[in-house]
Amino acid sequence: MLRMSKLADYGALVMAFLAKSERMLNATEISSEINVASPTVAKLLKLLTRGDLLVSHRGVNGGYSLARSADEISVADIIDVIEGPIALTECVSQPGSCVQESDCSLRENWQVINDAMRKALSEVSVSDLAGGRREHSVTIDSNGSFDTTAGGCC
Image (cartoon, rainbow, N blue to C red; front, side):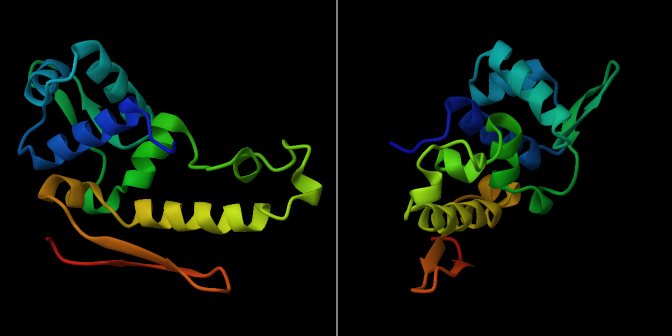
């Protein structure tokens, strides 16, 4: 089964919540509002700040805010920061790591699929997450080229 981790899912939730907020929020406020345990939120805030997706503001009125516009941060950015680079197979993430690689007839196709998935995740912004559901479609033609299109809200 192909699935992102709960931590990445919660990371997207934190980012979408902060995008909707009109002020900086601290870890306790975020945890309470999104109903995710404080230690998990604290870990996510640290990762997202280290990954340059959030900015930490110190002081009595401090908290966290997005490092750039919600339109400029994608789901792919969040996953990269929390889980590392998006890769469906080991040979896609680390060429030369598989003993079958030199004889594998699937590697190119896995790369096309991985690129399509990455592009689709890159097309969905934190702003999209914060604003609700948006339809996206990905098509791969017989040459292995792919195209993503975004539709309006459903």
